[in-house]
Image (tube, rainbow, N blue to C red; front, top):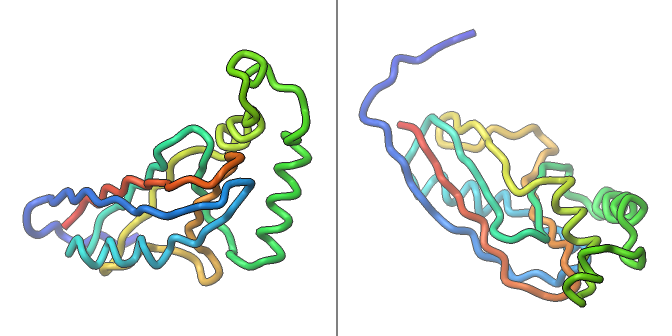
Length: 148
């Protein structure tokens, strides 16, 4: 394990990534947006925290390629089928109970180390936003980058 001596004051930078989505499991690679935000922040070493606003979208990392995107969508359809009966839908008269369940299972946030001005990700690992809702939306991902 190595450790660098901290230099300079701790910085905290807040940014927002905004993306239009189609819903229904639309999966978007936001890695370039994150890397751009880190560069813009000027922080070389620290941590980036991402949080999607909304209860029917989620964040994760994956190898962003069409086959795996399809596999993930099919898996979520098996876990929480869109055409199943949901108490949420009965209560509110809407059609997105499955979207809430999927987003809750995956989660709204990620924490990623920032080293030498870059998000620390594996070779085939991208940061993705998944919109499970039943209609197009404009999604916002709050990004807080902390470090030196």
